[in-house]
Image 1 (cartoon, chains in turn green, red, purple):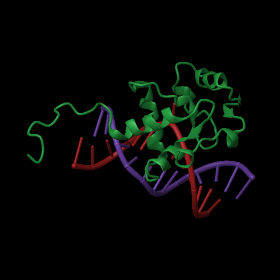
Image 2 (cartoon, protein in one colour):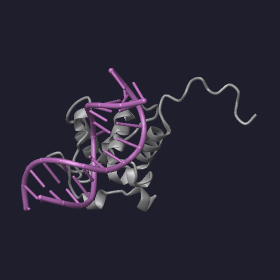
Image 3 (spheres, rainbow, N blue to C red):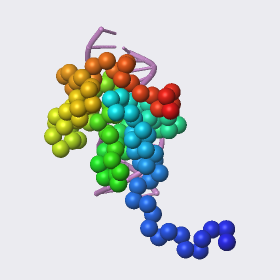
Length: 120
DNA sequence: ATGTTGACTGCGT
DNA sequence: AACGCAGCCAACA
């Protein structure tokens, strides 16, 4: 049997891509942040950073907890804050980890930035 | 099957 | 220097 005669009739609800993005996001240490582009680069650099953002949107539906609040755009802005239950939920989550957020932007991004392809 | 959209990013004018 | 556009891949209608 080259391949199972009865393939899984029920494909995984989430593609491998989503799972990968979620997994990387989960590896972000508390108190640190990363960017969509960094995750995209770690996953192959060919994936549009948009796709990562899209996958993050599904983070809410992920089975495991995904610290999406630690994923920002390359400017350190909380671009996904509008996708949270409340507009301030993301900022509060970051501040809870000791991250300073001013005007929807992380303070000291250079210090807090966590690059998966560099530190992982 | 085709078209559109999307939590982005880099380059060009 | 600021603004705008095009590129990237995958899911949904």
